[in-house]
Length: 142
Length: 128
Image 1 (spheres, one colour):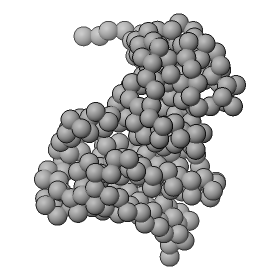
Image 2 (cartoon, each protein chain N blue to C red):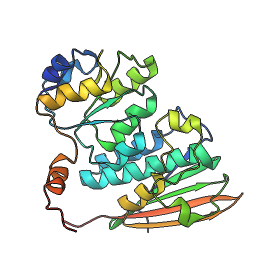
Image 3 (cartoon, rainbow over the protein chains, first blue to last red):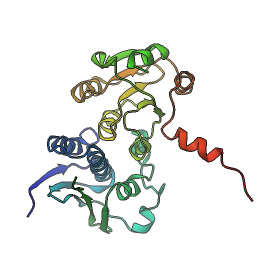
């Protein structure tokens, strides 16, 4: 049973609001007195995911599920999809436009950084249909 | 060093964060690439950047960056200032370039994020 679950809509090309959901999630986790390093990892993964959706994904949904032992983030979108996931996971590989780069994104670090900051990372994608990234973060008992 | 000292060294103006002038900083990063900030050990650091979008502030909040300095006298749009105020992230603007700002801070003992690690790597004996 999930203790807490909340979903946030992410709008295509909404560069102004991108990241708001991750900051809200960060604030929820702070209120729950979660470990600061864990919160940072989750916020970074959510934010990178939001930027991916805004840049490439079409519209999407970011869902956070908070459980006693783990926290899960799911980012689903109905965008262009990824043809070669292995290639997309390589550091530095990017299909970003000049506009994305001018905003400081699109350096090809998003997906690898999400993988590095999560305890479990799964990505499914179909070209033309969309992408689903699932990440899990273990809440260590102390 | 405190935010107040940092402001002096960079001859900077404070746009947001007058109440945080006593806050201490010892490391700095300089980048226009938000991806690099998110991938690095940026927690509690000062970020020097030439970018003035709302995403700079959001990146700082998410990554735990302690203060943002805009180089070359850049002043961000009001929306950016408002967001920084809401989130409690100090914003400064300096007339110096990125390079000169880095040099000034480094000369005053501010280090990079990975500096100790890099020094150890460069001190390693070369083997062939």
